[in-house]
Amino acid sequence: MSHTELGRVDIENLSISLGSGKQAFEAVQDVSVSIAPGEFICLLGPSGCGKSTLLGALAGHLPASGGLRVDARPINGPDAERGIVFQQHTLFPWKSVIDNVAFGLKMQGIRRDTRREQARELLKLVGLGGFEEHYPAQLSGGMQQRVEIARVLINSPKVILMDEPFGALDAQTRIMMQQLLLRVWERFNTTIVFVTHDIDEALFLADRILVMSARPGRIIEDLALDFQRPRDAELLTSQAFMHLKRHCLQLLHLQGA
Ligand code: ADP
Ligand code: MG
Image (cartoon, rainbow, N blue to C red):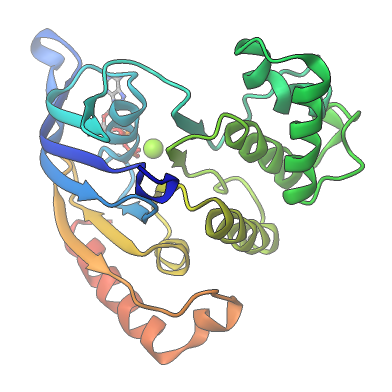
């Protein structure tokens, strides 16, 4: 199999219950979807609809009923083949930027100079050449998220799972990060499942938007986007974009968002 054929995700009749006893409730209900290798998927839905829960199941952090497979292999726990980027930072504060990025290779027993060389290259790719020896606390929020991305990429994941990764950034930085992410994705062709409640963000990034209902989260629309790539900020004000934005707004309003 060539690399571009890896990263197929199949979700089949997935339901997820949270809480226990009288507090138990269904957070995700009967979701079935297939994601092609290299596809950029955005999961869009109102706050509390179960987006993070669904992503958590793909990460292997949550028991789920129904089928979850990557390249036909069942998901039954966390694995470096599925890299995760959250909104909040998960970097080791006591490690330098380069050692944070190289960490995944250290776990694989790869020698120090080899792993640092790869980390250095990825840091360049995300625009952080020259910051190798800095510590996370010395970086801005956007720069820390770039380190998070590099740190996931070093494991050559088949799938990258992102949970509102740019949600805490200011509008300007956020757009820069979206463009950076698209460049990285175009280069590595990794499958991405990106959670957001921001319609603009979903429309700008995705090949396909899966719109979720209010709790319990179901997929209420599977929207393919054919905006040309590479995409730039001009897209945000185009007619076609506005049209689909209105459509998504209506869908979300129907959900009480
Ligand atoms: P989203 O990411 O779309 O905002 P979540 O997946 O985080 O939504 O949450 C879905 C629903 O489950 C929400 O109503 C949330 O309050 C609830 N929830 C999330 N995690 C837990 C938990 N560990 N125990 C109980 N309820 C939870
Ligand atoms: Mg969430």
